[in-house]
Image 1 (cartoon, helix red, strand yellow):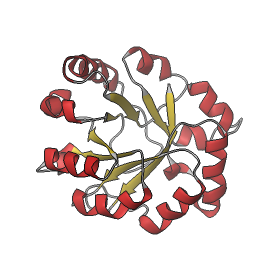
Image 2: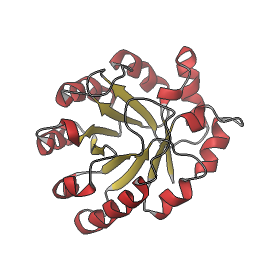
Image 3: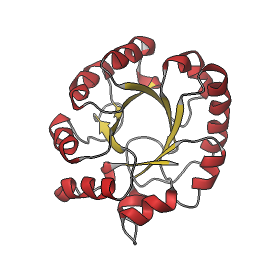
Length: 213
């Protein structure tokens, strides 16, 4: 299991140290939640902060856009050369065009599905994707409870991926911990995003990451 700690739950007063600590603790990606206060009712970080994160991160960035005007935000964050940029299908009128744009910038494109959105909604985009991110909470805030129906959703998505693009990865974001990680693995999930679980873990970041792996 690959682990992508979400810096939304980090201590922003000591953000550089926290990013270094999760990278040294064995994470595989650094998950960056970008919220604009419009698509979701929260405002997080912009390119100034992500520039600082990119300078200290020794693992690739995984940028999750929760925004309106996706193309504009892709242009803002592409210079930091993240591994992935993911955008919400619910907000994009021309997803195939945006996928092509992200790939043309040398970045792996990914699509995010909110809890209510079915995997079949993106069936005919799967061949062009490197990853699909399933939200297991409603997007906008950290620390929410895991929505169990994402397990069955991941299984359905895995079946579609096996038909259309077996190399496409599945990522799950929201409420992930050591109690539901095995079920996610069995459902075919490749990467988990964990914010509160990692950054609030009583035994430290490294222990939290290892327990998920």
